[in-house]
Image (cartoon, rainbow, N blue to C red):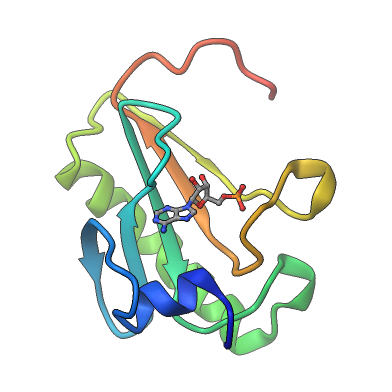
Amino acid sequence: MENCIFCKIIAGEIPSNKVYEDEDMLVFRDINPQAKVHCLCVPKSHFATLSEMNEQQAEIVKKCLVKIPGIAAELGLSDGYRLIINQGKDAGQTVFHLHIHILGGQDLGEKLV
Ligand code: AMP
């Protein structure tokens, strides 16, 4: 997708600090970390939000969720972690290519939920 920063990262046109990659997803460190460990799990297929997701893309998100525990273990997040998907304006979504935040490496403190 033209002008999508995450598509450019996936294509290797913009550098990233890669943690994991396979045919369906790329996981890289967030450029502005909100916790000691903060990575983004990004499906390679471009869609902006959950409401735009088709069945095939939903399968890829499922694969992401299946892979994340192993990736979290590799990242040393044995004491737990938090996954966040910001969906739309009210959630503060800034990059409109669906991604799952993986946050951990510390006590994440007060919870919204
Ligand atoms: P969201 O606000 O949920 O859309 O999250 C977008 C995230 O992408 C933010 O946490 C940004 O810090 C992160 N981000 C933006 N550009 C880059 C980049 N070039 N490399 C890594 N993370 C990025």
